[in-house]
Every structure is written in structure tokens, then in C-alpha cells.
Length: 75
Image (cartoon, rainbow, N blue to C red):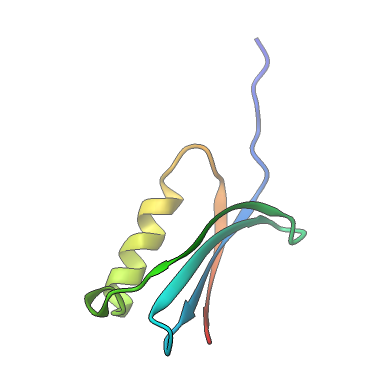
């Protein structure tokens, strides 16, 4: 049986502070889109660095992706 090796991927959080929404995106290391959730509400209590850290850790542990890098963009 052959083994599948996942590409290295990057997790990007784009946070629109004035609009109170955010987008989570997974890209390969060449910038090709793998997945996005579209935009979703960002509640006030979700904006802390600790909460965003927890989201990143949770997403990194999903076995369908091989997240090796992450970025937060504040717009």
C-alpha cells in the first residue's frame, strides 16, 4: 500500500477589524488556494491573541492539512 504525503501548507487569518469579520485560508507554499471558509463574524471575545492562538493550534492538528506556517493579516 502506498503512503500519501501532504504538501506543506500555510494557514492565513485575515482579520477585518472595522467590519468585525475574518477569513481563514489554507494555501500551499506556492500561494495556491487549498481551502477557505469565506468570511464569518468575528465576535469581540474572539479577538484576543490567546483565542487566535487556540484557533491556529486546533487547525494545525487536523490531519487533512500539513500546516507548517501561519500568518495573521489585520485589515
